[in-house]
Image (cartoon, rainbow, N blue to C red; front, side, top):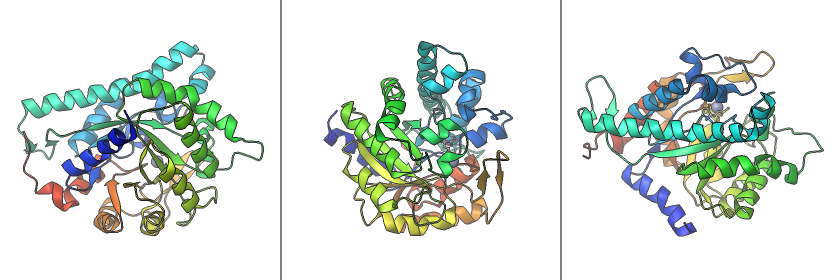
Length: 341
Ligand SMILES: [Zn+2]
């Protein structure tokens, strides 16, 4: 697949969606809402071991809420993390692959439901509409693997190098890519060094799979480490694999400003999937309220974000299928489009 075909993946998706595609919502926090205990260094990836059926259910819930893209449970799944739990390298790689298989299975089941059930928006609010659905294999940062909240500080210490980050991610990215997702989702990227590592890795490995780079911010100006968002977005912009660049797991109140800033350097589609506006307290291992906005407030911003350039919109931590359904409904081209069968 060359770069031409790579970019057509996104172009076709956006065209089908009427200009704006819907990304799913929080996976980990939704698994917790269903009773999973994620207090573990593997976080949501623990469910790949303990409750794959639950991951599949959550993927299906998001598809039925209108998501065009589902993100796998591999955010905090790493070979190193599984090995630390006593798994062999081979078993660890199988677990990575499994995260992609679960999402692909969910998509197949969803398509079956579209065929069996009534089409379009069925009585109980489920959206059963056959459409192109993409499986994005999540790659969380090195900080996510550390499981100490450093994906929200972006501080890996002075000693961290580009080479170490590339080596950390190399095999993991390759295994995920070969498991058959439609694209790779480099999410919650906390600093410039890691963005650079991902870009070089994709290049060095001659990776043919498309990818998105999504950064997080806690001040509405820079990425969480304090590195320049413009410099980070420029790295994404110049990588030939990258088909979308944007922001995730960031409070909704910062999104408008951040998007405006990204449009200065990005010509590629812009993706945004904020969290609910609460913030994560790494010491207490819990989400705490600050100026959280309700689902309703969050969704009322969506069309404004699209006006300033977002073309893929969803939710991150603490958002639910309800949030995603509301996003789908608020997009003018979605709620009114007759079901395609
Ligand atoms: Zn998040």
